[in-house]
Image (cartoon, rainbow, N blue to C red; front, side, top):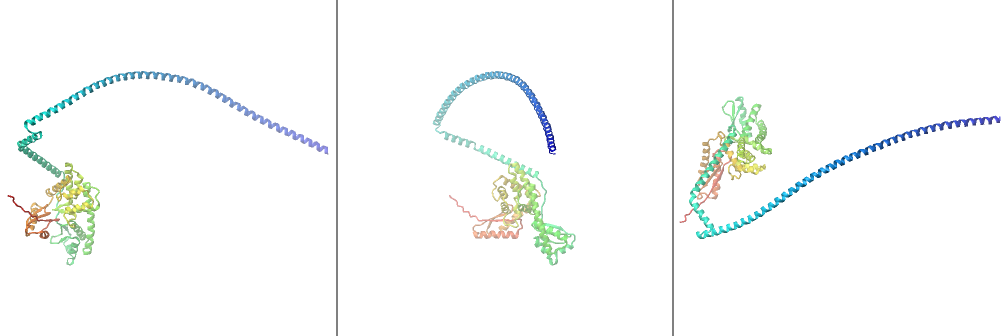
Length: 518
């Protein structure tokens, strides 16, 4: 039993040993096969590297040969170019040598000429000295013979020439002055005629009354109201007179202020259209129309400045300019007159070489004081200057405004052009309604009013009736009486005469004493 167990154990060990040997044999065979394959691949890679190395060596040899050939070609070309440059340099060197020789010859020639000129200058200076000394000796000899110095001889000769030809020279000077004055007068007339011809505007005049058409005469009773309350309220609100007469289909609004008349006309038309005419309604409508007219004034001012190419004016100044649309001077609309003046003044300024922009502004603003002369004391020139200063208008333009009626001396060409354009626009046919007879009649009336006072020696209406200048007798009028006389004359003019604007009363008391010395 034990022997069997031992035998089986030996048999199992042998079997396990055979099995282990077979396993190790098969594994070693696989490893050797893998190693053999790897070695084969490395040998192939080495063969490829050797072939590439051989190919690279052959390429290097070919490149080396090609580089040597290129180097030989470049070297030959460089040698050829160097030889050509050497030839050119030799030619240029030859030319430079020739030029140097030519310059040397010219320098030598200039040196010879300079030497000759120096000698000639010295000789000329010597001759000048001799000439001046000879002239001095000659002058001295003449002075000894004539017994006069050079200055005395000149004065004597001039006196004789002046005495002999004075009448001739005076006649020539007078003739030339007349020719120049005539030429200047003709040129001025041509310029003014051309300016008037190039600018032509419509002829229109403004009256002092406005007619309002009504649908029926029954409305006249509503306009008057009970015991005249409506018409009184209307006149108080607008500041005009309403004339209701037997004229069929119309009522008349009268007043010197065009703004008030225009406001009254629009208000009346609205009231008639609405049908409700009573004091409260009248005040309401008049207030609305006044606001509407204020906007219209601004629009009129904008249109005027746009037409003349003026920019930068503030709205308040534009409103004052537009207000001129409702102001007249002898029937001529002031805004239209100012725009017309600006167009004429621009043409004159361009022809004369003056500053056209200053002239245009001066013409537009020259009568701006008339827009407020019913509300502010002073002449329209003084008011206009103050308005321009308030709105910071250029000083050159302000001078044109101040000088257009010669209240101050004109100190610029633009001021003369503005005054000339004012005269042209106001004097053209049809511009103003007042006839020359009426104008003279108004001036005579001013003078006659002043002459009615005791102590008045002379009275003159000047500045187109804007000023009356009165000379008094110094024996009858003293300083205190002079002040009282001025106030009395002004009061009588206000009470008895009708006139636009303001009239200055200037009372002059002058004392002169003359004696004769025998």
